[in-house]
Image (cartoon, rainbow, N blue to C red; front, side):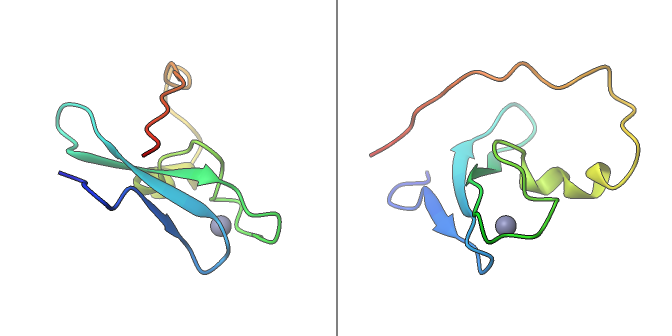
Length: 74
Ligand SMILES: [Zn+2]
C-alpha cells in the first residue's frame, strides 16, 4: 500500500506525508513540512493531521508520543 503516493502538498503550502500507521490506524497523515506561509496553527510539523480536532481542546494525554525519526523517502 501507499506505493507512489507518500507525499502531498496542501493548499496552504504545507507538505504532508502518508505513513503506514500503527495498529488500529492503517494510515497516518502527518505534516512533513510546515509552510512558512501557512497560518493554520493546526498544522504543526510531525503532528498527525487526523488528530486536529483533539488539538482544539486541552490535552488530556499524559504527554506527546515518543517521536522517532523515520525517513521513508523514495
Ligand atoms: Zn498548513
